[in-house]
Image (cartoon, rainbow, N blue to C red; front, side, top):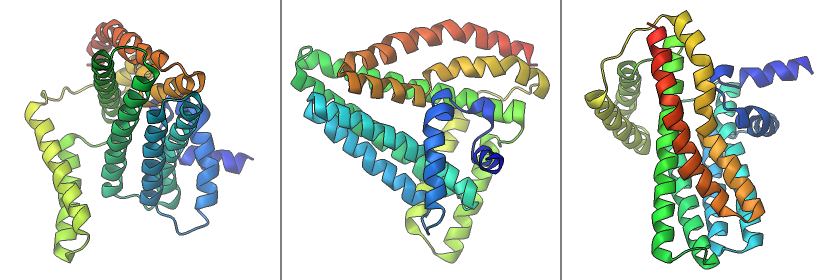
Length: 285
């Protein structure tokens, strides 16, 4: 049992950055899945593609608009979350992760988000909860809000990696890693799709550099102590929390619960904790 627990911990990200729903629900299920998949020649990217299939299927079920289809949509979205955890865990377990795999994983998240919100909008239009025009405005605001929440949480999680844990590179180092990978693929004339994905990601990284502020240097211990609680507060609106709320709303056949959480609660939450985040950063210098 202790061996299994150590194996489970070895597949996780550092515990301070793990979301609570992931730790107590999605990753334990993904761990069992990974133990099974590790016996077969299945790659992390194949698990990512499976997550895309279940995510799109969830969106299709949402689009039907019936109570039964909403239930299936919630279950499929839960399966998507498990598979999304599983690809990274399998890569860490088999030690065969790749830079391109990270890009594939992120791209599939965007595809699934588009499928879910499109399906949810179509399904809710069939439920006639509000006028069509108003409904699609609400769906668009919810989708944009969820994207902003994910970006903010990822940013502060990345900052924690860099300044507190010292185990993630800056954006400049990230560009160097992917540029080296691209050069290697170009030299061997292999995997044109991977080369295209890396070029797109490098373009995105250069945009980040153009608009990013000068990086402040923090004391590692001070940053860890000041931000470990802040990181937990940010994780109240991270992607896995949105997923849990949407699954619950789907099972209850109450999609307005998810929209209320995403548009109202999560945005108010940001306004409440941003001042505390600024204070925590000042304490970390």
